[in-house]
Length: 129
Image 1 (tube, rainbow, N blue to C red):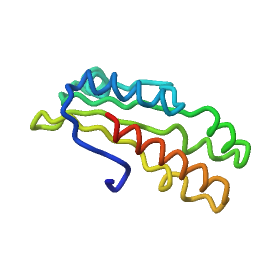
Image 2 (cartoon, rainbow, N blue to C red):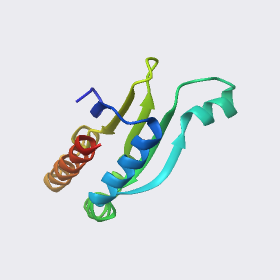
Image 3 (tube, rainbow, N blue to C red):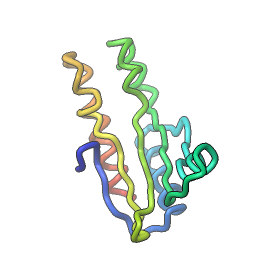
């Protein structure tokens, strides 16, 4: 765990890691809504260089539906972001947001239960990459 989420260093290449993360997310009921290639975005928008870095905006529709039905403002905290990036030393890291921290603002017991289930699934995703 980091301050923001669940993370680990992997032995796969950057591209292999992205592919594996997507497959593991799918196994856990998540779809990837958007892929943000931050290296490309920063180069195009700021003419700045950086290492490979992608944000995968993942969503589990069943949990999202239940959560938003419970608290409509919960949409402000969705989706669950998963990142894959290369460090300066060429290590590949993968991390997922800690949903208990992200959704922890809610005092709704059911939202906290959903956050726990999402965390369990995201931990499996990271573990299996």
